[in-house]
Length: 442
Ligand code: GLN
Image (cartoon, rainbow, N blue to C red):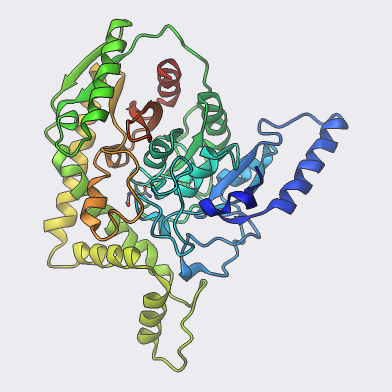
């Protein structure tokens, strides 16, 4: 179906159809002339509107970046283009990737293609819906605290967040730099694996990318895994009982198939959402300081303002509510009187989580958790209650706090008609096992 006809879903902010068609024709001609094909020859890919594509607008779904045109490619974009991908458009998302429902976009909400009165999840809601509805073959999103895995879960597709340091963040608009990673939406593990192989790897523009071997995936159908899940996570009162049942029933089947399944104690669960929101808002308040109306995008129309007033007016008019809330929160936790009580504490929690996680992976190959405590909620349902929205991130932020890779695998259907999945994680840079595991379980 033509993307334009699907626009009620509002998955795309901008579609580059003419250009994509021209590229497709060119690739076709080159192939006929005998040019060897790239790994992504003709693959139609959508980009979350936080990933830079040279000479194309880039807005982060925010008014503050209206009319901004990127002057360079993200490294992931360069790598995909080098393999002959066709980049079809920029996809809707929560403003600056802040949110869990894609209702915080300056370009309007995105609808879940499975049920139009429900949210697609967020923040990469447009990226999920575009793949869900067949408006591109695969797409890229960004995952700072679940923004690829949770919308994948809500839309019934695969969503991978690679290890922190696997994919270059160069050209990805920063939300919280020590958490952000570009992630992948697709229907099959083969597609996830191929795209990951292409976009992964060292980059002179991002020193946090590690020199690890490219993750080349091969099926491993007979592998047996040692799988752990957190007791506290499955017993959490906020978890939909139907999701709990489905996951426990499935793990029982895995046990019967010869895998080891163990419920382990994880008493830190209650600290992860607070630690995540303290640290990410702190980083965001600093990262978003650059949007001041002088260097980028939107500038207040008010004339003759004194400089501080000019910044204030531009930022008040340019940023949406949720972004402002987070800048304020982040500024607060970093302020002199509160720094130790909040920021330092949260960093200590993060350190504890890393240590605990390393210990777990001494005895287990895989950790599984639900991806989200519920299926996709109704549009508007949580908009007046930011805390309820934040708490819905309870199962995803763990992987970003610790840097490990995580994937949401679409396995189930709920009696309310919505899909949901299970989330699997491995130790750092173990994406190949993660994909092998997921493939076996699908
Ligand atoms: N829902 C989380 C948040 O609002 C995750 C966002 C993300 O991963 N970009 O912060």
